[in-house]
Image (cartoon, rainbow, N blue to C red; front, side, top):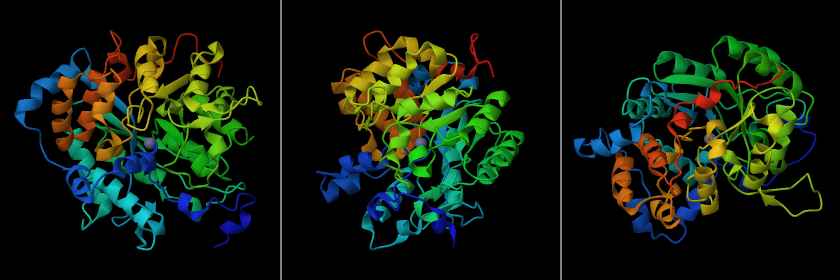
Length: 428
Ligand SMILES: [Zn+2]
């Protein structure tokens, strides 16, 4: 394999960083959950019970969450596909996820599969993943939809795939196939590395194939928003009116290429300047980033830099964000409170679950949300019961129950209204 020869820098964050799960801080959540937990507790409390259909008793609690929402418009704009290719998906998982001498990686893989209710002995991982996702979707009213993410390989600076940096890979063709098979529930999000020599041709194909957005994870994939190759890519997206979803904020979960400096929210300005709409995943709610506007200043919470960007008027019609992973236990209470309270942001925010992460038991702490003053104690037990059956529904209902004083996340956020182009939108 010649790809490695094309890598021009960063020989490598160490192996220990290489292999992490899909999205927003899986590792952090997983291990803050596991630390201090006895094995017996771990077995009892940390596994996803993966129960089936909901008991009728909890239905009123669920129905209340749909009050005021047009369920036919409900859209979850951040859900992951995963697979190992055993049923022809073309998906891959990095080999070290299976190597017994890398117990952390193996544990991480098991945790993700547990979150997705894929049994260790599943006849097909590809199929089991989709079957569970479809079953969870059936717990929602007709019309509710999910955006399913492809996930491109990490590429070198010359645009060649680098398998060793690629934690997992979900081809565009597979995401398209899964969505096309159930269009009443699913749409698909392409993932195309802009350094690929055929990036624009791939983008054209994705747009022609109905992709509703494109997803990048810059630190893992090695995408620098300042790179000149981003410009034609973004301009084409802008012309098509299709948004770019960019992970911002620390990514302990999928460092791949290990370029942490590339998930600085301030870099998103370079993409916005090309006229494209950008959805900042997770509201950049995790970790620190350099304040490049004031180079001598210390690193700041990435979320603060995101807030700065949201305050810049020139991006008003273009800069959006999703709330996926924001209410996980590894985020700060101040972040939870701000996202609820900053009502001037709400029309620019989108609902996202970061599925399968709502099924990863240690990743959410309802008592911590209660202590932060954003969740009522009485809601904890019914939410926990719901989660055992349907983590997607849990994630949605939880976000509908959250309150900070009078402030709560509005119905329009869950209906994807932020995607409707604003009046004062781009020149592109
Ligand atoms: Zn994600």
